[in-house]
Length: 471
Ligand code: GLU
Image 1 (cartoon, rainbow, N blue to C red):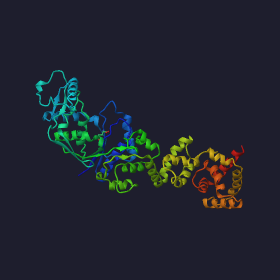
Image 2 (cartoon, rainbow, N blue to C red):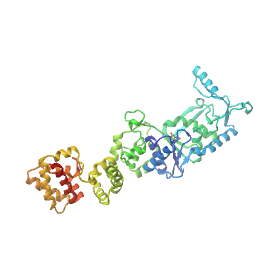
Image 3 (cartoon, rainbow, N blue to C red):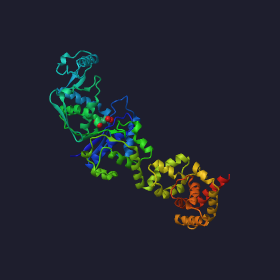
Image 4 (cartoon, rainbow, N blue to C red):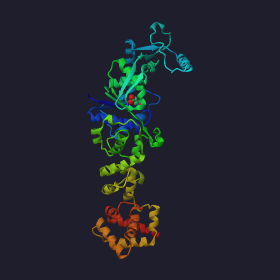
């Protein structure tokens, strides 16, 4: 079978974490099977759909690398087609006009409620002749749903689920103003788009039975359904903003890499043994709906952050530079010249070993490209106020000036010789160097930092530190 999946978000908000996972599963399933992954924007709720949300969804998908294979479908633009299908069903006797007024419907509900019955449309217009139609009232179109037997869903995740047809009333397909309902639009679009597999959140499970009835009425083949359990917060409650249910762009802004997000989202509900680090290539090879669990998964920010660290360490240095340069430029309010960019590139392999997010990476790289004199962190400044520390810097400035080559090993050796001569612990030498060169008490290995900064810049920073202390 030529697999065609789709992601069908309603553009009423950002691409949240649950939607991103649904998109990923659909994308992976399509890629695994050499099929197509399509996107449909379900923008029929005109009041709540916004262009900003549409943009955010496409941006989020693009950032996550979930590329779609055909022009996205905008559901609202297909309204005529949806209405046509409903009218054809009426002609075929599979749907009918219902002229109940809102008052009549609410009276019906009140009676059912009073009698302790489930509230359902009672089918009163199912078999009435057109001649009964009251003048001046615009009817809705309802599906003539089966009243006996069962509707059966064979779900790849939920297994076989059955509902007695007596429990489902005749749903509205077209409203009185002629606009299609959500149920109608989804089914017609999935059919027209040739969707073979519907993978979506299990909050849609109850809709599916009605949708299946509609497929049957239309005489169309059913897609294969998979309803995936929702994502919960670490405390087991339904995922909310409090837990980190943010839009994809928020994760990008927090400094997560798309490949780490993909890996993390994949593991939310899908697993293969104990594998935690799964590359996208590997995921495409392995992904199967059969391995999606039936229990809700739990979103864990700490896990995502750790995973991001793993991917940062694997990431290409030049790419990471491209990611942090705009952040640094924004912070230092100046554009970085090629020398600074080159320095970052050379420093990156070491920097990325210690960061868990792109933002942390930018923070830790900042001292390399900050204009002199460096702003010192308080702790670093205090270390440099110390007379012993100042003496160390004064002595080292002289020795470093003639150091050749200015390489990490040679510099470490120079510091070692100096500390032995002065009966100082190496830490007592390295500490003021670190404070003066990085403005901080934590940095990559300090002799590496010196090598990367070069002799001129290193000496200038050390002199700055002394001048500052004297002043
Ligand atoms: N538009 C629906 C939503 O955003 C999804 C419908 C579907 O996948 O069938 O929840």
